[in-house]
Image 1 (cartoon, rainbow, N blue to C red):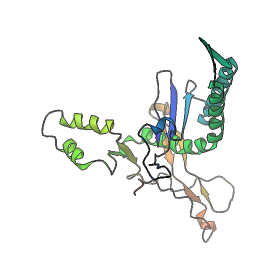
Image 2: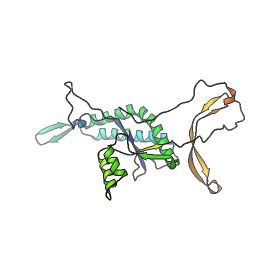
Image 3: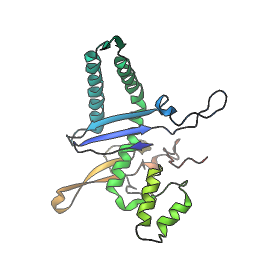
Image 4: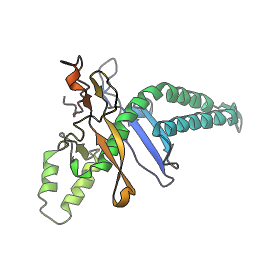
Length: 247
């Protein structure tokens, strides 16, 4: 799961989290509801400044990671080894916590980069094709509450019910791509002969409008180039399936 808010200082804040699981002790007794304090779910968070629109997103992410690591290192150097309180000396464990956070940031970065591909492509898609989006509640949303939203009996009942669902941890999901069709069926001539191969799908910053003065994102679908040059391709391309997990 991920959350991508944009804050006032034009930074893109990406928060990746895992799906929590019910954990039991060796005697099979359930944990306390407060055990998350001691055993938090694994997550990865990075705030990415977006002040330079021309900067490639990956470069912005790498700079953000470097800045975060440097900031934590400076904090470690500033932290005292111990804290004095009346009659006692308390060992300061904050530097150890910062070192652990730095290690987790570094170790989790490769997985974060891979997840970033899905996140950025998703953001581009819902921005470029807002009409191809269906928003609905998850499959496990309580049906009685959904009924109150769909057929409210009193004014503001739907609004209050939605607020209740959000407080219970339910969030509407944006499903996109159902009505999407191929945008690029033919390869462009290049003047040179190459063997049949798949051309990767990619985003194009397409000129449009009066005198082509504006730009908009369009998605160029994967396509087989020079399909007639080969009887068949060994690989049928990559097909990705994203679906809700069902128990």
